[in-house]
Image (cartoon, rainbow, N blue to C red; front, side, top):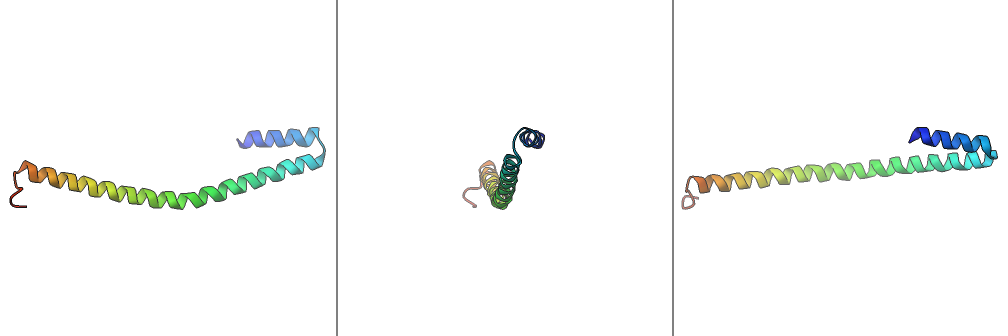
Amino acid sequence: MFVEIVLVIGAIGYLYQPKFFWLNFGAMLLYLLATFIATEWRAKFFKVMTQKDAAYVQKATDSLLNFETVKYFNAESHE
C-alpha cells in the first residue's frame, strides 16, 4: 500500500502542477494519521472485550464441567 501511495503521489508530482502534489500528499498524510488514531482508539476497546470474553468462557467451561461431574457421580442429592 505504501509503495502504491508513493508511486501515485510521485506520478502526480511529476505530471501535474506542484499544488496537486501537495494536495494529494496532504490528503494521504491526513488519511494515514486518521487511520492510525482510529486504530489505536479501537484497540483498547478490543483488548477489554477479549479479556471479558476469555473470563466468560472460563466461567462457562468450569460451570459445565462441574455440572457434568455432579451428574457423572450421581451426586445431585448431595449437592
